[in-house]
Length: 260
Image (cartoon, rainbow, N blue to C red; front, top):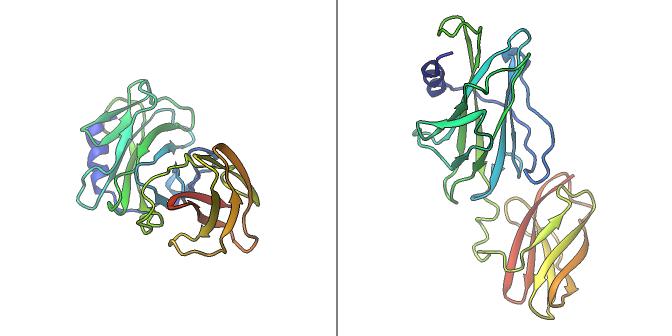
């Protein structure tokens, strides 16, 4: 298989791909698939269909075809001008590598697979205000003759929007409490863990994905040090992405979660 062939196709790709996205912290083996294209590209990302600036996500590429035992790929996250967006991080150097600074591809020892092949790597989302990022992917279903002829090249794109929810709340700049919320996704109940510096009231409010407050303020008694609070997500919240706004005095933190 010739990398130049994949690169040329990769740069011309114009199609969309539906994908299922889940939190990196709690990866779930769910993949979007379009059988008529005979390959699939799955990306584990949280929140759904959006990326939080600076957060790391695991990308999984999985071409599959009965009778094919050798595969190749290239993927690059770019903007409309073709510039690399975010940071590609190689997590398995024996099977993947970065070429031309903005593409991740297979290595010579990372092509074998009976009926399919899977590669994974990490991606750090770009800075706030970047906007949409499109993953351009090209996949080689090789006939194994080490020539450029006879291989099948299939392509897809995946566009991920920037999570605008936290960016809209300008007063929340950092996390002074080392906030943890688990489990995430949340069914009904969850644990909120904070690191507090004194005895102060702790209040929480729920926000929707646009940053609109959708619940009454709930207040707890805080004490110095690590403290766990048992919280119950409002029953009226439907399945989707929400944010928990935590306030202690004039300090705030914001935590995204997925309501199952």
